[in-house]
Length: 381
Image (cartoon, rainbow, N blue to C red; front, side, top):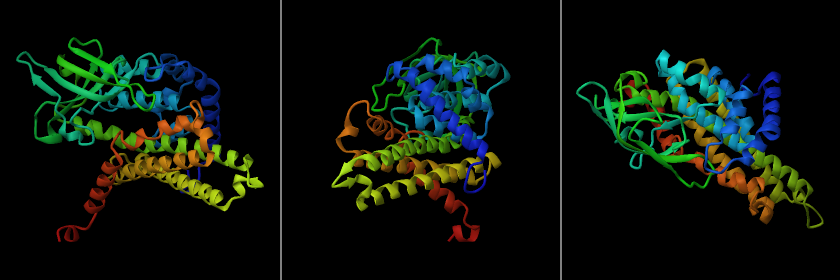
């Protein structure tokens, strides 16, 4: 990839993904139940090798994958992304036994993963987690408390769970665990959300976990969470860009054909200028997403990665909201009809501005990283 365009092979791959999303994945998505895990869809993603790409590719490929799937089938994109979010900590921080037990099944679409970070009182402020991991005299811990807004809950086969083990204050006292769904004391329920995603809550009533369930070291769980989010935040932006591009293309086709005032809607300057603004913002967001992904692929540990990831998610999700909203406006009442592409996108596009760190959180991260980068003598003034 250059600074401004994708290569021919990348563009061809994206086109193939859009065709797969529309031709093979969309029919399976339409047979699923909103708000529930669609296991046949996951199995097809595994059969096509797309889940494997989530774990075997870099950040840019992940972004291209999510953007292209979102263009043709948002449900397939979300199913793929939630698998990656829940299982990526296992890939990066899990033991050999944990990886061998779970990752092949996740890649094949046979096992469903969940990422259990947020709580009723700790969403954007992830360091304020309250889920308690009480030490057991014989070793291990008992988890007690609640998680909320959890991907694939309560239907996942295992969860990456972040709990307070107390090695230090705030983020320094959080550990990550791999918790199979059949552990005694673990319960949950689904939540009826605006977007048709499988999201739920989890309850932990003395759920037993041991050292074999740790992901990484005790007290280092917050780093596991942030490493995952630094990878997936730009790709949330890619999801948003895919929706924006779908809305923009639908609007171009509709306004070029819709008769109005002796011509077409596209002949009206107000409409043409609105479409131009939609296209410009979408392209800017797309390039910022690619830049953030490229920074991650060059060096995941670079200090510029959190800032670029936050910028990409912020601009892309806010842009997608703008583009979809104006696409609905330019279509008029037809876009409000249940089942219309834009009616679907209008419900889908709102959530990404909140999850994996709300827009306000992203602005805070960006500002913090900008000031951190100041020369020492300037920052000290």
